[in-house]
Amino acid sequence: MLQILGRASSINVRKVLWTCAELDIAFEREDWGAGFRSTHSPEFMALNPNAMVPVIRDDDFVLWESNTIIRYLASRYGGESFYPTPAQARARVDQWLDWQATDLNNAWSYAFMSLVRHSPQHQDSAALAQACSTWSRHMAILERQLDSTGAYVSGDAFSLADIAIGLSVHRWFATPLAHPSLPAVAAYYERLSQRPGYLLHGRNGMP
Image: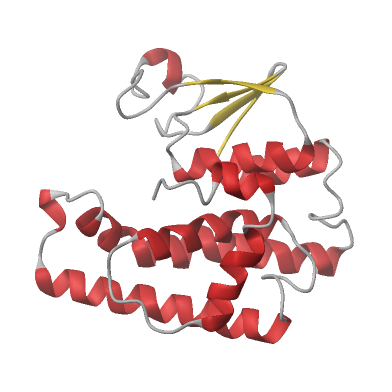
């Protein structure tokens, strides 16, 4: 059985949990990370030298990096409907998965640590204002894309990109900052909320 290592409150672990829900993959999960077993232990670092969750074990196959994991699960467990095999359609999904992991994640990191985690190292007012502005600018990119497709991030059909970005959208709405009007993003948030996996692992009250 698939094993998932990582605490369920981690946004990156929740990508994997939501993907498993979409694909009806049975799994066992172990709590690792903040408040649980240390990811800096030799046991965990033998699996992921970065000491970060999630990690999966699929029989003897070990994998880390959340977006890579969900790509793997879709490829291995019949997820062609939302991770298509034609090169151009797959590249469009990968484009937005990579954007989430780099540009969008970096945009919300400081503001989230300041406003939600209340990290003492993230309380500089100028840096926070800049971070909120940068986050809003990236959400405006998403707004334009969703307004163009009228449905989901990579087109008119749900894809893996929506799993990664849908969790970031929940974080956007759950973080106490001034939110500019983004009607396409708001409609997308409600559209994703029709999916049981998102309600369970995405829009579940955990920022």
